[in-house]
Image (tube, rainbow, N blue to C red; front, side, top):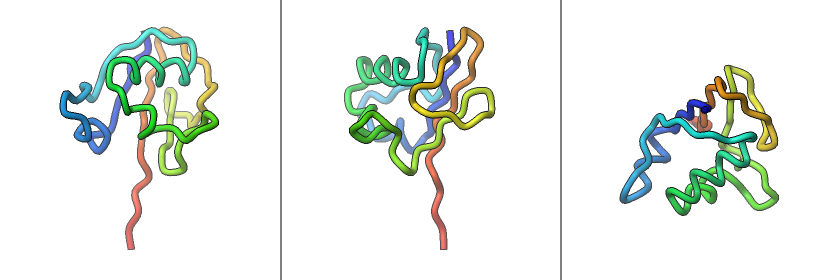
Length: 88
């Protein structure tokens, strides 16, 4: 199962928030997002734009490497969803 890490800025948007770290069995990042959506409706809209593709401000890393939505996962993958940070 892939280890999935979600940002605090995402989980605090939901009344029954997902944990910040969980284990999911998925073959691709897109499948992982769909599993999150099944458990917490609305998560997909926060992560993805229509297409499917990630929103511009969402970066996804598997084992430290930035990936796209079609990236394959292994049983030992560590997935981080990281929102961009803006400042001035």
